[in-house]
Length: 246
Figure 1 (cartoon, rainbow, N blue to C red):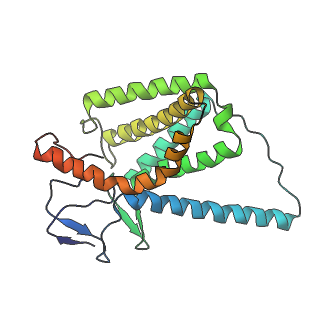
Figure 2: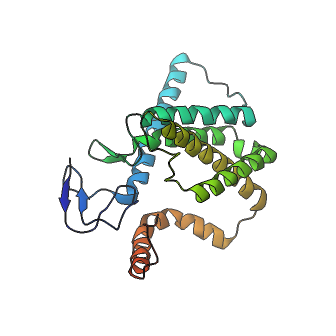
Figure 3: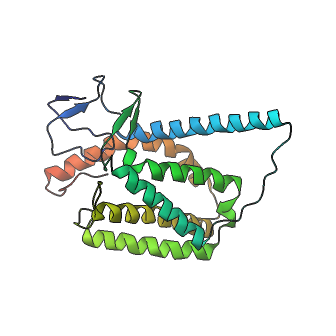
């Protein structure tokens, strides 16, 4: 499945860059895609969306009448709790077979971490729905603040006990795995909703600088890893970094 060479350990998710003396190569002897796995997965989701969208339009044409778009109110607490439960359950079920940090090559092109696919897929679909039904503007700020408070409290607890605590597990049929799947999913939902609400309510103006920064965000994502790795090497040489960054 892989070939190993002396050097620096490179993971698909860039979680471990230091601390091992091996370079992990894929089955085709090509290096893993490092942090670009995110772009690969996003491209796959986008292609699936385009195919399903075209198929839907074709079905409308065959039926010879258009679809009437029904307004859907922005989700509130009950719907969000249900969403969190569904994502947590799907995450736990997938991690029975694929624990965290286990990567699967798909078609020798996509680097996929199945343990997080339920979350990524769910939020991609929610992003499409939020745009289609204007949820970003209609979402109740009070609901967003409540969920942000819960997310910040969860992050605080996580910093205190650590993600490697015994009560959390990466996968398998166990209590810690169920707790981490639920905790992880709840943090994703609460922080995403809360931060979107805060920025919507507080950052209402754009400037030339913010427009330039937004336009360059994609390039920054692609190019940031060499800088982060260089800083990590400097900190490690000075004994200031016990674990890899990122």
